[in-house]
Image (cartoon, rainbow, N blue to C red):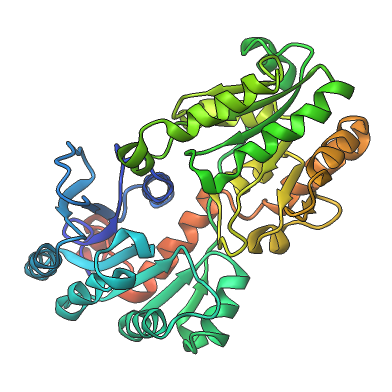
Length: 399
């Protein structure tokens, strides 16, 4: 057995103050594991600091790695090897997080890493190119376990990548509790009284398809002038570096050109978890207009379900796995009027809308962060052995 005062689990991931979905996911997961295990596991972070951005990190970040420089990947692996207290590395994987073709620099890191590791594939694409296939297979061969968050990702790993199913474990994306404040009180707080609120949240980029929701409001606002579409989120930092606020400006111009200033509200804010859950609690319909049909997972989509929001979503793999006719509506993004028609159908049917929200909420009962933390801590204990507190040894020493 190992001693909890020297045993560490090291996460390799982006981490706040970086603004991205995986950074927020890792912070929520680490906090949940800390709470669930009463700090029994010592968790540290190796932050992926792309291109040496010199971000100022606080605890639990203990080291950084420039994942776009192979020499930094190699040096970090050697540094981890020298730290005897690190018993396991948990790697968050997305192809864009690592340098080289298809993020191949991670293989340089893993080739030198002497610690056992588990890896979570946030994206699993069908019909992989030969090089992507080889990289995923090589990573999986070296890993103790491969974590995915959906049954579809598990199926793809087995059928398209030929990964041993014994290595694969499904642990769902965690979700937060809804706000304890009532929807009516929250609408008053945010000055949305007497409004039927539709929302979308997350970091903005063209692949989110927000313009589709805005254009749908042209028809919706004619029949439901009290309807308000709220888009909550800052522009993605990577997009800001490339083109500034070009996309947000395009969205605002679209709003202005169609006279929708009273029907669409862009909120340029990276909301706290508390504020985010308040927005979702007051939401009457959640819109998911992402253009990527192969998107494996979406924290924004799952948070909306966990908050009891009825969802209208473009067809994509997660929606097809999580929604049915009782909990949401999946639309064909190529059908021009389908989004507006379904919004209006739900807005005029309070009973159906609320029942869908209740059913969506019920589907997420096993995804709360404390349950997700339990599954992770169990996995970690299986690999490294459950730590023994020094106080647990006292009765043995007295015998």
